[in-house]
Image: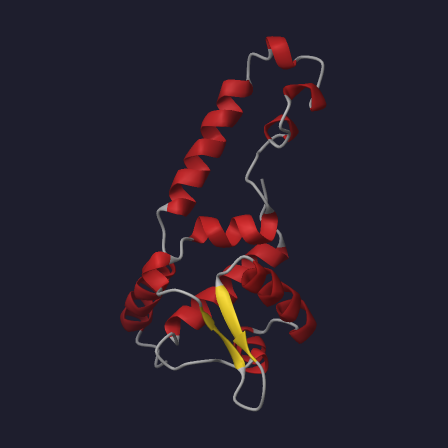
Length: 148
């Protein structure tokens, strides 16, 4: 399974907002420029994040985006799910009924592998918060001697 640019950029944008969660709203153009994400693409991503209840938007000259909850309460799994949909390494794990997948559904000897992989991925993503990303990033910046 490969994460799309939408999921990748979405997580980057959300981490950017988490780094600035005490500063109020951040303009879309500021995020786009800082993270080198095309404005229109970022707008679509943040629309999905707002629809999922992960960010709030404020219009006007002082408008922008901010996290809807503290960064330690927003999990990476929520972000990826909002942008990519449910995680499923094979098509038969996407469908509600196994019949939509293939003719071997009843006798599939490998399905348990894909279910375990999905469950492990979901567990990892659901146990990493935006705050974890920010703290890890701050540690790396300190180790590299980079000024933020």
